Image: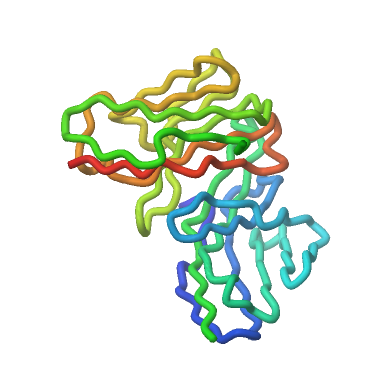
Length: 112
Length: 113
């Protein structure tokens, strides 16, 4: 079973729409969680960390459900510039502490 | 200057050639990583290093080698390049706990013909 699994999409939404992505992780010992954004042929960039209590950054809201081992990202009022691939990322407690595990990404296209 | 710098940005090489991709960082991070990315396959870990004397194989290390010349430098070599090593290669760094995630370089687009 993969460490991190995401629906690859693509998600195609109009400007102004609300869209949500989920991902699941397999290791209950995972302790840090992130969403990264990757534009085509560019490096992944940290979008936001995900905290146990949930957190919000402008139009973006991240939630963590440890019991069910899933993470979500909600984007409100989508903009054309939100078109990208969103990567769900977790780390794992133990000897490889610090190493991150990446989902394959969910592709989002926002159209006018 | 970028925190994590990869060179070259683009490279076309011939099958059988040896090629080195270089990565340097100014983050002061102990940990450095090399990933490759192929369409539909996501990021796959090639090698990682937790300090200068600690090198570890990742998921797909065959055909690759690395050198950690200093805390700030981590090079990836393809000893004898083959066409299925055509990919986008990323170097990344993290602090010891990884609690702040990775910082990635801009990537090297490698084509083996």
